[in-house]
Length: 310
Image (cartoon, rainbow, N blue to C red; front, side):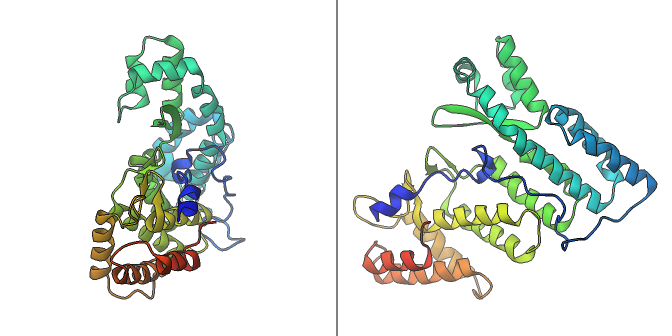
């Protein structure tokens, strides 16, 4: 089991905390069968849509693009709105490495350490610093649609998915659900410093919501991203993380809060056939009950077969 524990890392898929988390997916198949084309909509919708496209082709125009979408999203068709939102996210992802590099400067990190307060917006942090260059950087990053996160003593920008919520009423069902999932991740990232910062019950809730997305939207443009997120929550469920392991290092006992959360979830869940995740969890908990909720050879074998770490 030690080998397994050592393989568990912070799941950087969440919020794209590392550059290159996932290559931006093409936008041609946003929840529609391959080859589908958008409805033309009204002439006004077509004009609004056409005007937005150049703004979403250049990361330098992100502030202008965000303002334009916020003011005009209501005017386009559902399909067009979906395409625009996906293009916006693609642009945010592609521009993120350059922003990360700017924030990685030692002088910026030192200044952020002096002004940072959890939950502060970039605008609030900008108002707090007397360093003109850092103030400009923070203000610009916020205008470009990013927020600040911290882990292991480092400060870095991430996509502010909470700001995407305003688009949910305009886009197709799969991207509406995608925004719901990603904005939740943005509001409360699951882990920091290689340890979980959410409850075990929240781990299972997120595993189930991502599994539901995969089942409900098999042709979604964002299916690969949510699959990766689901796999991270599956690993969190059955292993935990290095600084919050499911089984205590000293005696191999299962974390008591996890035991309560998993047992409670299975007790109130009816049929399991629609959820491979719950089926694995059910088999896992039955084995653990037999072992007195301790890690033993049978549990190790179950994990190796049903939930192997890649």
